Image (cartoon, rainbow, N blue to C red; front, side, top):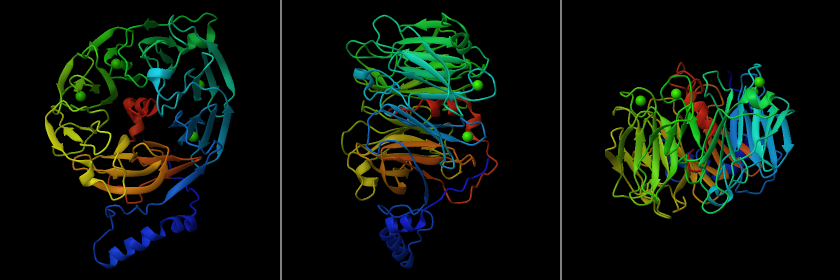
Length: 477
Ligand SMILES: [Ca+2]
Ligand SMILES: [Ca+2]
Ligand SMILES: [Ca+2]
Ligand SMILES: [Ca+2]
């Protein structure tokens, strides 16, 4: 895949950043050597590409975005959802299609139902095996829509009865439960009364939904231990070619409970992630962050709980999992901490041992909100072995930064009004881009430095990368 040339408005870009550029120039004259990392508080000069979107400019708490190749030309496309609207664009910024429709997207899933804050509520995959990608979403009238990826034309609409005590099906995930590829669907919903939790699951073969008058599920459950604020994720944990469902309970591809983490009755999970945290243990591991009582971090796989840990019982709330210290075996687990202001992140190694902690006030650049960071993605930005984290200013349409989770050092700051942040490889050089929704514009930032590992396989070749990028949300990017 090639890096497509976006039109960059250089004049506007220069105007926007001329003070920063001048400052950097002056620092450069002073011999500070700013070639790679910008100084604390100085915006990065990395150019971004803009895609103008046909959506309302106003910030809305509902909706999100994903990237997927929906017109099957081998290049990433963007799907953006807002209240009553879906828009899709290709990588060059050309609109593919848009739809005015009451797509099921929500803000607070505990009161409004799934999919929850920033969740895009949309999926893409070749679900009928004809070699062309379909786009799937739910609408508030409890209907599943399957549309052609390239044109948006409806292929099938199906109303699937939701369980008693629920309003409608609220969250959907393309899965592979039968070993036949992306041909299955997981539906999830919450209890409609009280504190809403996504305990109801139903698995369907999509062929059954497409072809049968009265489609029957592969299996259902009403006891799934869901994330409190967002939908289920899936991934093939044990490498048998079939996806497990990830939550406080892990559900096998045929609907059986594999593992249940020991949550206390009043505790719940805020975030869930999948990664190969422990290469010494076969398969992938799941990381879950607990809220209340013990405020633990759990590492588990499809067989067992591997460890649980905590740092002074401080609530971890948000996390990022990655190879933040290449000198240590396995991956490191960064936790943001819950503090409404003056966050105090902490980092565990792959064994669950504390290895670092610091105060955000001591590392954040000048002018960064003292509410800290949110929407924290692990990012392969440099192409080196060491991964970094990307995040936006918390509780505002603010700046975006890339920082080193181990030390909190802010390496790049991007002057933004970011309503949404998303991280994925769209340029095709395997390194990841920052994709920022700013009002009705997408800004795409690529690393302009040479790629030190150009032959690294694309991240999209990993099942769990694909699955995670399509099931991200505010709490579990
Ligand atoms: Ca495409
Ligand atoms: Ca298809
Ligand atoms: Ca599996
Ligand atoms: Ca492993």
